Each structure stands twice: as C-alpha cells, then as structure tokens.
Image (cartoon, rainbow, N blue to C red):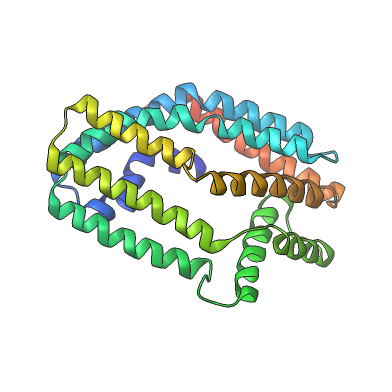
Length: 270
C-alpha cells in the first residue's frame, strides 16, 4: 500500500485535494499532474535516501531505552526535509494560482469552510474537555499500536495521562489553521485580480509557505516548541515501558518501511 500510494501520489492528490478544492478544468488538471509528477521524482531522488537512513537510525534505537533528546533529534531530522520539499512546490503552485478563476476561488473558500468544520468535529472542539481528551488518547494509542502492537492496560493508562499532560490546545491549533487558510485565499485573490508576473507570483507563494512552516505569531511558535518537547518526552516515556516483544515488533515495522523506501528509490516510471 505504501509503495502503490507513493507511486500514484500525483493522481491521489489530484483526486483527494486539488479537484475537490478547486474544480480544475482539463488544461489545469493536465499541467498540475505533470508538475506533481516532477515533484514526486525529485522527492524520490533527493529525499528518499534520507528517509531510508532515518528509518535505519530509528531501528537502531528501538531495541533500547531512549531519551527525549534522542526522539527530538529524530523529529528534527525529519522536519529538516520539509523546507526543500515545499520549495519544489513554489513554481507549480504559482503557475496554478495564476490560472484560477473567481469561480474556482469560491469553490476553495467553500471547501475550506467545510474543512474547518470537519477539523472541529474530528477533535471534538465543541464538546467537553473529557471528549477532547478521549480523542487525543485514541489517536495516541492508534499511532503507538501501529508500531508496538497491542498495548497493555498499564500502557493505555499511561497514554491517557500523557495526553492529559500534553498541553494540546485545540482552539489554538484551529486558529492557526484558519490563519493559514485565510492567507492562502488572500494570496490567490491577489493573483486573480492583479495577474502578477510569474516571478512575483512565486515570491507570494514562497512567503505563504514560509508562514506555514514558521508561524509569524511568536506566542504560537513558543507553544509549538513547548509541545514538541513534551511530545518527545512522552514518546520516550511510553517506549521505555515497552516489552522486548513490542520493541522487536517496532523494529520489524520500521524495517518494513525502510524496505518500502528502498524499493521506491529503485522504481523507474514506465
């Protein structure tokens, strides 16, 4: 599934995001698919070797107790791949943005509103604190069991306590999500109204993507930094309660992902 999904990523992204959000015409769809295919091949060539190395490092850590610093180092290494990846999207995003119509922006605005409603529903932001905690706990358990297999009752209780102490603020995350959407809409509205040169449009996309990676709100940036450290500590704490069997399963799962990545690195599109 990983291999198939990756190799078909341009079509999946078109089907699951671009068309539902923008209702592209045939010419836009053809150009967007070609652009996405180029980004995919760049990612396969430039970033997949890094992910293979990253997964190998994780396998070496998994059989032993780990520290929060070790977990954060892995997270930082993965995060370093985001900026060069987003740079690859600047020109295609600007090209697509310059081709959009006012009607397509209306589609985007409507879909963004639906996305926000779905986000509130997913995280139960309009429900009780208890209900929100249940969501966090369930997501944490699902993620953990993907690697370790079935968690013990003691580990499940620990996960619940870690979720309770995570410092996650759903409304704050929702507000940042809304900010990113509004920035994106305003940017595309300027493109549609002013028809800037391609270089200027790319600069506009660059600024938007940078604001996604690096929030302009210092308070939110501090919140993210604190949450990252808390999550590193929580991941280490849970891992250090796992049994030899659970750790062996985690190594096996990580090795499976590494094998998938190396298979994708060798793949040659027909």
